[in-house]
Each structure stands twice: as C-alpha cells, then as structure tokens.
Amino acid sequence: MRPGQGGTPFERIGLRVLEHLEHHGGTAVQPSADGDAGLRSGRVVVVTSTNSGEGKSFVARGLAAALAEQQDGDVIWVDAAFDRPPADADNISRRGAAGLSEIMTLGSLQGLAPAGVGTGRLWRLERGVLARPALLQRPDAVAKALIALRAGFALIVLDAPSLAGCGALLAQADACVMVVDSRSTERGEARRALMASRLGPDRLAGLVLNHRPRPVPRWLGGA
Amino acid sequence: MNGGVFQPAWMPREAGGARPPAVQRFIAVPWRHPALILACTLAGAGAAAVLSQRPAAAPAALGHVRMQPILPSPEVLAAATIVAGSGGPGLRLDLELGPPLTASPAEVLLQDDDAHEADVRDVDDIDALLKQLPPAAGAPGAHTLDGATPAADGRGMILAPGLLAGLLLGLLAAAARELRGDRMRSAREAEWALGAPVLGAIPTLSARARRMLLAPASRRAAAERA
Image (cartoon, rainbow over all chains, first blue to last red):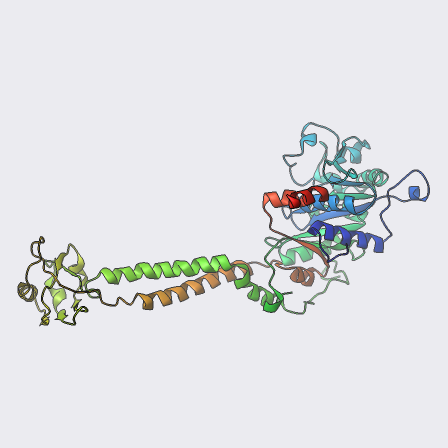
C-alpha cells in the first residue's frame, strides 16, 4: 500500500512517516547486538500539537499500532505528556511502577509492557511516578532515556506534550508529527508555536488534521 | 528571523494555496452544516405556521366569527365595519374591530344568505345588526352563519417568508459556526497556514469507531466480515 491508497488514516500516516524517516536518515531498523544493524539505533517520532487536548494521545497510539504492522522492528509507544494528568487507563503509573520518568532520572528500564494491541512488536511505556513537566527541559535526562529506548526498539513513538512543553524532546526527534484540531487549533497560535520550536522540514514530518469536518466535494470547489 | 521569532525558510509568510481559505470556508458553510440549516428552516416555517394560526382564529379571516357581547371600550369601534355578504358556500363575514373585541367572545353565526352591511359607530349598531339574525341553537345570544366556509387564510403566503427567513437564519448560524475563529478547517488550509504537508486527516469518530481504528488489522478485518 502506498500513501494515498486505501487503509485506515493511521496506516496512511504511518507510511508517510516511514517515508520521511527513510528520506532523512535511512530506514528504521531493529537494533541488535549482532551484525551491522547493531550499529544503528531506533528512530524517535514525536507526536505533538499546539495545545493539549487536540488528539495527540489518540494519534500517537494509532500511529504506533500502524507502524508496528508496517515494518519489521519493535515499536514502543511512550507516554511523555507530562503536562497533563494521567489517563484512567494509566494504572501502572498510579500504582507507582516505573516509567519514562524513571528511565530519565534513574536509568531503570522497568515499566515496559506489551501494548496489547496489534502485533507482538508493539510495546508501551507509561510516564512513571516521577513525571514532571520540568523533567523534559533537561537535555541530559531526555537524552539518557532516549538512548536507552533507541537501543531496544526500532521506532519510539512519543506521546509528547504541547510544542511549548516539549523541551529537549524536539531536539532528539527524528520525525515530528503535529496534530491540528480543526475545531480548536488557531492558525496564528500554531504558526507561532511552530516557529518558536525551530523545527525544520528535515524533522517536521507533517501535520495530522484531527476532527476533520465533512470535506467539500470537488464539484463544489473543494480540494 | 522575524521580529525576534524564528521564521523557517520553508514556512510561507503568505498564503500558498490555490484558493484562499476564506472562499473554501464560504463554500463549505452549507455543505458542512445541512442539519443546522434544515433545522432553522423548519423552525422558521413552524414559527410562520404558529403565527398564521393567530389571524385564522381572529374574526376577520373566517366565516366563523367571534364577538364580544359587552364591549369594554366603545371608542375602538369608531372605524369598525361589518360586512356580511352572500357568496354561496363561500359566504363570508369580514369584521374589522379593535383587539378588545376578541376577548371573552360569544359566537355570531348567520343562517340566511342575505347581505348584511352596516357601519358600526357604537355598541348599539352591532346589537341592531345582530338582532336581524336568528339566534343560534343552544347558545344564548349567539347566531348561526349557515353554510359558511372558512375564507382563504393566506397561510401559504405566510409560510413562504417564514421558510425564507429560517433558511437565511440557518445560513447565518452555519456561517458563524464555520467561520468563527482562526481555525484550520481543511487539510489544504492547514498546509496553507503552516507550510507543512498533511500526512492524514481523522474525521470525528464515535467511541466505537475510535476503538475499531486502534484495533489491529486482523481484528478490524474480522469485525468488517461480521
């Protein structure tokens, strides 16, 4: 399947992201201790938006599931949205188990769990109990966590905070997907956030329009 | 740099789309909000129908006329005229009186088809006119208008402007909803505004559709087969 053909929206988005990654640094390959592939590390895909509540988590989860089916390596879906309270399903964090924040601060890789959806190659990592928005502003902590994750997974899909709160995550991203909510995202605000983030076309894979309204047909002058 | 804010070279400063977004939005107004426009149109028609009921119940439009036996203010009758004319089944009685006459009415009905016409200058004029008519059975002080049929009440003429007003109101409401704020309502508009490609678009989905979308392909296929 190629972009623009059939499949779910997430499958089409996943193909476009893989194309972007391939165009900017080569195909995502499962890291391994053996052979040439061992020299490579996983690629980081950051899913962000202008403000919170625009559908980042939904897109990140769907994108991670689609990517797990579209390539051969392991994919991990990471909850890095430290700027919002954990979701109801985030039982691991509420029980005090380790997550991304523990990897960032302690280097512990505990907390990894199969995502339970898609192929067996899809994993998930919750935020952990030490999650604080300020933690994402520490480049050393972010780099430490992502080095650990890159060593174990072909693709790391980060459910990140809004652009202003991403901090050091953006500098580590190989591809950034920006979610735009057609119902709430203001054009000027999104432009300002995007400009302030200093993302270039090499790292900004593209936009995902969430809550797309009914498209205008071509015969009415629509796209 | 742009006033101290980083401006990527690839981000367009001005619109780059083939069609200005405002035009796209304008076209999208009726297309994206048909339910809202239809609801407003029907509401306008309903309001017109309700309004049309009020003159239908008033004495002037129907052959079945209601009058008040005791008039509270005779002054309002200064310009009143009663015209009762024969026209076969279309016997019609037009009454032009002030609003106080519509309160606590007594029925005035005619049994003959003779023309009755009188200028009403006072309460006594009405009484004199009514005394020419035979009293209605079972209704003291009332009269019968035999064979009378309701005259055309002009409801269609009221419904049409009501529909039009409702349609305009619906279009205005839809336009306000569609054009409100500075949002990006289509993939082309998002590309135009942010200068980045749109990888995909996700429509507004129900909770069940969202779960299905997140389910693995094998499970989706099984659900589609089922």
